[in-house]
Length: 194
Image 1 (cartoon, one colour):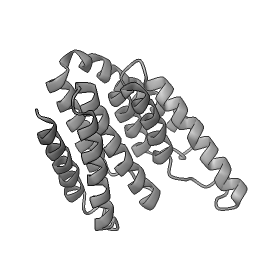
Image 2 (tube, one colour; image 1 turned 135 degrees about the horizontal axis):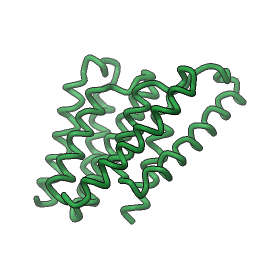
Image 3 (cartoon, rainbow, N blue to C red; image 1 turned 180 degrees about the horizontal axis):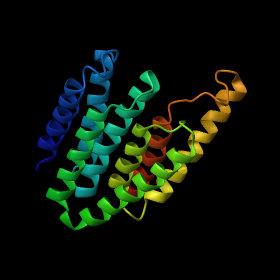
């Protein structure tokens, strides 16, 4: 697939996923969708020359979209996450099938870790966070899922502390955890692409 076709494909997939998820994303502004599309085009165009770059850049765009929605609405839309998961599976299967077992193992590890944490967190971690951890594992693979999730948890802890200290939230209140997990995964993905 040429670089130009990859960019067009990536932008189309992101926009289709937004339209498909429109009932969940009713309060997301059109300019936000345009902004995510521009980022998508840039990232995919920048990294489309390699298989890893294509799925990592696509994953970064979805992580940004998921973070934005979670921060605004405190929900991780299942349809957006499902679209992202299917697209990453398709890209890995098509471009680098030898990486698929490690990606699936990473997704399983991410799901398992956060499923246990959600049970221990007394309602502070939702099902969307658990599924997002599985998506992070699918993106990073078995070798990098643990560092990505640990970094996301560290960033989430710092966010919670900052919100509590600033008086913007109480320690017993929940806060959107998706952006912290996504940022941790994004840092690891960028590290992997460099």
